Image 1 (cartoon, rainbow, N blue to C red):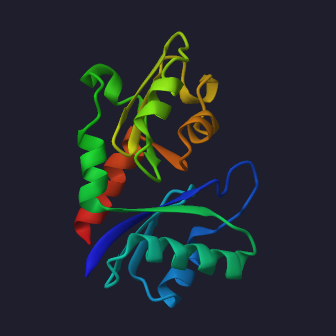
Image 2: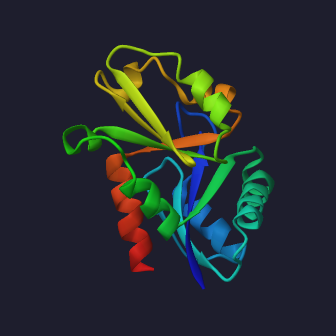
Image 3: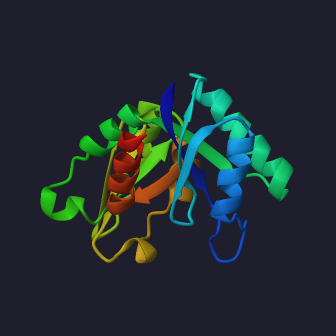
Length: 178
């Protein structure tokens, strides 16, 4: 049985797409996932499954949420080792790493698209794309950043969802317990 991390995008933000975590845990357990746990309200789910196909697991969770809550939610699945690799590959110095964000990408973006997107630069913001993870540091804070996930999704032609350093640490700790 494998341990997986589901990253849901855009739930419980500004009163939109409300998904109570207790209901989500129950829903996913009834859907056949095991040892379902959640972390904070922004859509971080750790679970176990005998299924090995990440896309099938994503679709299962998407369908369960759509059927139960009545709206679509973007879902990305990572194995613990995949998430750990994303975390450990952060290219930033230790002094800024803890204030950086990790945007998991649905696919490895095309190198030409990365090169084109990289032409845009904002003062006090830096990012690096390594495989299917975008590392973003914003000196003035993520909420004031000029770069957005929408910019990267549109220009790299991928879906993305971001988590901060502390959330990544917590998800790795939770997934090692399962």
